[in-house]
Length: 409
Image 1 (cartoon, rainbow, N blue to C red):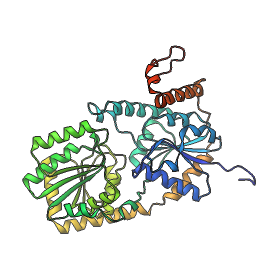
Image 2 (cartoon, helix red, strand yellow):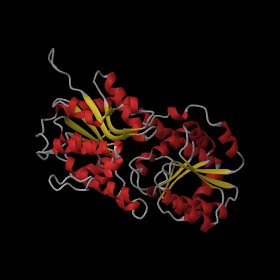
Image 3 (cartoon, rainbow, N blue to C red):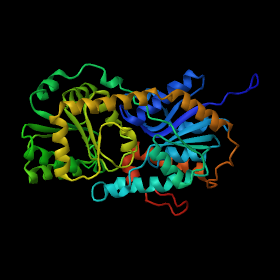
Image 4 (tube, rainbow, N blue to C red):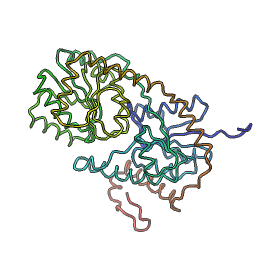
């Protein structure tokens, strides 16, 4: 770069920044690397957890920060207004794909998510000719991008941050479950693609056939999926299986306690882009049994125990073998230690900066084509959103479609 030349800025844009989730950890990690390398770097979002809002900038400010020489790292996990603003700007773009769950997973459970996931997967295809580089956060996600036609792809590895598990555990919770019973643990959102119903069936077979002194701990938020939660409780009642604990969202101290008391980690998920709780279980030295689907085998990286057949009797037998054989547990933990070491040895910062250099050096792509009144419609939509928030009675009186502009809200 010549003296006095403007250095490109590298910003991130995404729909929402969550506290403690895998995407949130990665976004904050990317910003740390970029700022340490001397780049101006902000995080533009539609919404953020209140604990993280001070670290973000409203996505509507993105147009003011835009410059053709800048690079936008666009985290794509579902369609959003932030995504569309990013699409329309002249900045270079590197897309980071965190996977979108197939919409059929939510049919009859969550109508809104069916629609959002469908439109998100459809919208992803529009970025094939927009991006200078498309990155998956796993090889499974990279292959999906390649299948969709993205010409230049790569893997920006997930390197989980385990600091939230290094603090003190909730002592009261630990004492409640730290006894002579076997604790079978799953950590993750209580949503249909995680197949919580299969976990309950596996546990019922294990408890009734092998070990009555066992409990199932399902740790994760069910917010927005109360209908699915009701179905799970109905299943527990039909199977007449006691000692199933569905905790909901927990604090870091409580999560640490659940990992500390676990004897085995069991995963039945049918669709994962990576599955961070698996490597958290590695870190906490818990034997992992996981269904070999989508990205899970790559995340396991030769460690733990993979099973192919989600048959309750077979999985129950596997559980019993692992729980009752301490020598086998030691061998499993050795494989997990090695896999975790390989994961943590990845040069996340160096890989990220090489991808940034690659995107900034790529031949200039044509500016994105958007409707002539795109920015006018953005302004109109923003004004309507303000009415919805601050004058709800007026908002409810508005027609759903304006005949002149065809704008829907």
